[in-house]
Image 1: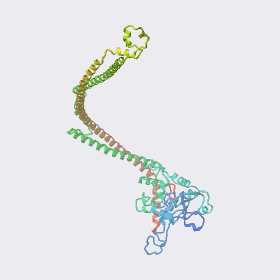
Image 2: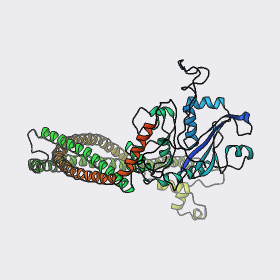
Image 3: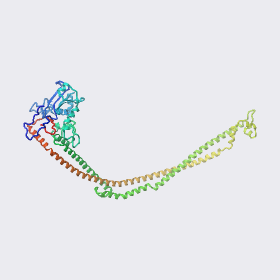
Length: 557
C-alpha cells in the first residue's frame, strides 16, 4: 500500500498523532464501477472511478466558466454531473438498501436494464468485490480477494452478500465501545453508522444529527437524536462504556420521571373531577380530596339513608298484599283445575253410558227379530213349540237339541234398562252445563287474579328498582370520595417519587460529567484536528465528498 499523503504541509507539535500500529483504515473503497452487464469487454463499462485512502474530491469542470448552469442542459457542469448519484452508488455498495428515490431508480433501470454497480472494498486490509444489481430479480453478491477486472475475466463462484456485511460489522460495529444505544436500547448496527459516515447532501444545512433526508428514500433506520450523539461520540472515542451505561441509566430515569409526571396530572385531575361530582350530588361543600375526613364525612351522611333503603327493600320483598293476591290467584287456578277435572270425568262416564245405551237398543232390535221369527209357521214335519216353552213344559227332546242362543239372549234382555241409562245421561248433560258455566266464571276470576298479581308485582318491582338506584347513588358517593382520596394519595406519592427521580437524574448528570472529564484529552485532540482541517481549506469547492476512515478511537490523518 502506498504511503498516505498528509493533508497539511506541516503539523504543529500539539497536533494528535496517528495510530502507527494500524497503517490502513478498517474500511475503505478503492474503486466503483457502473456496468451494463457482468460480461467482459469495455463496451459494457459505463463509468469506473478509482478512489484512494483519505479525502477524495469529485469535480466536473463547467463548459462555460462564466455562464449560468442550467439543469438538464447538454454537457457537464458542476451541479449536474452526477456527484450525488455517485455518492448514492457508493452508499449502495457499502450496504444501503436503495441507491435513489423511486423516480431516479426507475430511470436508471430503464436506461441500464440488467445493469450492475461493482465495488472494490477493503475490510481490515482484505479485498472484497461487491456487486449490486439495478434491476429486479437479480441478487447482490460478494467475492473475497478479487478485483473488478479479475471478476469480469474469471467469473468465480459468488458468495452471499450477507457474508460481506458480516465482515463489515466485525470491522466496524464490533470495535465501537458502545454496543447498545442508550436512549432506545437498540443494538448498534452498521446501518446506523453508515448513514452518519455518508450523510445526505440535503441535510447539510440542518442540525448535525440529521443524516438522511426523507426525499432520498434510503430506508435507513431512524434513531433518536440522543442516540445519534452517543453513537458519534463512541466512534470518535469520547464516549466510554461506563458513560454509556450512565446515559442509559439517565434515560431510564427520565422516562420514569416523564411517565410519573404525566400520571400525576391524570390522578390529580381525576381526584378533582370526582370531588366536584361528589359536591354536586351532595349539594354542599366537602373536605378536599387530600383530607381523610372526606371519606368519613360522606360515609356518615349516607349510612342512615342506606339503612332506610335496605329496610324498604325488605318490606317490598315481604309485601302482604302481594302474598294475598298470589293466594287468590292460586285458589282460582285450583278451582278451575277442579272443574276441568270433573268435566273430564263426566265426559268419560257419558261415553260409557252412550255405549251401554247403544247395546240396549241393539238387543231390543234383536228381540223384535226373534219375535217375528217365532210367529212364522214351521215347516211341515217340525214342532211349532218354542224351545223355551218346550223346556218349561218338560220336553225331553229339547235337551237333546242344540242350544238356541238367540232365544237365550232374548230372555236375558227381558228386563230393558235403557230408560235408566238415558235418565243418567240426561242428568250428566245438565251437570255439564253447570260445570261449563262454572268453568267460565273461574277462568274470569283467574284472569283477574293474574292481572292483579302482575300489576302489583310490576309496581313493587319498579319501586324496588328505584330503591336500588337510590341506594347505588348513595354508594356511588362513597366510591367517589374513596376514589378521589386514593387518586390524590397516589398523586402525592408520585410527586415524592418525581422529586427522588430528579435527584437521581442530577446525580447521573454529575457522573456523566465526571466520565466526560476523563475523555477531555480525546475531545481536545478531535477539536484541534478539525480546526486544522478548516484552516487548510483555502478554497471552497462545490463537491460531493465522503471520507470513510475508521480510527478505533483515534484520529486518522
